[in-house]
Length: 254
Ligand code: PGA
Image (cartoon, rainbow, N blue to C red):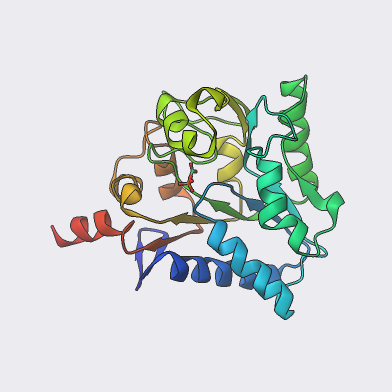
């Protein structure tokens, strides 16, 4: 199913695999049109299926990463680069080592930096020099965060250091041996950085995302739901599976 709410184009697919395939098609279309653009990637469990499909498309010759550059949304801070929960490791295992990306075109925030402010401003500069992000992929936290921009009193600006909320630490504890090992901070593209992307592709899957998806699309635009700012971006697509779309259906029916 496809429809629009305001400027936002919504695709609802049957299940996680169909959501992943749709998202991979949207990415591929963009990458074929602009093979040397800068693309923003996200981590988390949601985009894994899409990355699997992108790897398949690459193997079939339908996708060429050789000229692309990549910018990841965020990274835990501090985290050692040999910690297998670091987002660089995640991206290498799921995508970067499996396709023909040029290593020098891969950009991630460094979770080991001793100078976070320099690291973050250099990242902004690199995005700028790459011509800006043409398509940013986003997941969404159950609290509405995008990147690691947590609910708060204002929308963040540029890339910077953020404190993770209890909600996010709880959600992400499943990836670590225990909750105490989840870093308490992260480096994240800011909301302004994300909103500067020419196009945005937000993915969500599963019933536990249905309430926040509904709040994001229909609710008040508020920093308490960081993703709600996407309502004012001109080129956003949201790809959901049916479970994540349940809250939308309820709203449309009432
Ligand atoms: P998830 O995380 O894909 O693991 O649900 C999404 C996010 O926190 O942005």
